[in-house]
Amino acid sequence: MIVLSGLAKRYGEVIALAGIDATIEGQIIGLLGPNGAGKSTLLKCLLGLISFEGSATVNGLPAGTHGAAIRDRVGYMPEHESFLPGMSAVELCAYAAELSGLPRVEAMQRAHAALYYAGVEDKRYQPVDSYSTGLRQRVKLAQALVHDPELLFLDEPTNGLEPRARDEMLELIRELPARRGCAIVLSTHLLPDVERVCDHAVIMDRGRVRFAGTLDELRARETGAVELAIEVRAEAATLAAALVAAGASCEVVSPVALHVASLPDSPKIDAHLVFATAKACGVQVRGIASRRETVEAAFLRVLAEPTA
Image 1 (cartoon, rainbow, N blue to C red):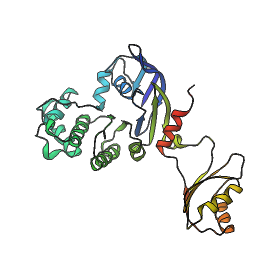
Image 2: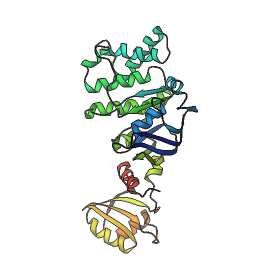
Image 3: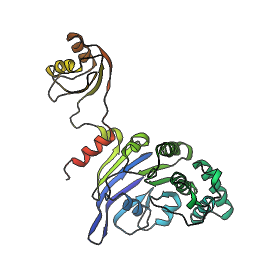
Image 4: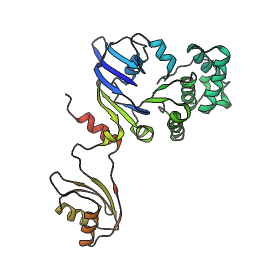
């Protein structure tokens, strides 16, 4: 979907993108990184909005020379406000549709449909500058969708939203690939958002791509250790001590919960061994499940890894 080769961008002495080589694919891709990592600059390069060195293609089109053609096929929801004072939501979306090449009548029809999908139909004739933050974000999503794009770039779509509005926005995003047939690049610093809706992730730091792949690949432990989350009736510390003696690494979370992992060069710690060890030391196991690393923990681990 997106192929980068030696992609570089400077602002004077500041290196925003440092010669990126990466292939990005997926259905909903989380674009992650701390402030200043280069996420917004990357999106602008891919849209052909700013010049850059190296090459970048979006759905086979070179961003350096075919920016207009890419923008006809890609929807962009910018992080910052993108409306004219006094303009209503339907006027804004129709204007965005006309900019993508649609005739006036079809642009207006698409504007109404996009606003209905985004949940803004009741206030679509009111000026956008009178809206709440949540409604403004929905209007930005609608204008990104209005020309029926193949790919969406969403830059911090839940920024500034209160919890309920954030949940509703994430649900809209989750449904988009199935309902609208488009892929999504979701740029955000909110890692729980990525965990909820994304299947792939790209991690950037100081203008470089540190990881690109599926969330399962992101969570994968280099040691290959099996991790289990265990719930017991009581005496978690007693079971932890017995499992350590059997060759495990244990973390007691509470008197009734512990996390267990195999140690390198030790016998595999599996459910059968846990139950046998618990029975031997008189501890009742109430639950056992594979423990997955959170996206936040994996993100911090990737950033802590030394660069090549």
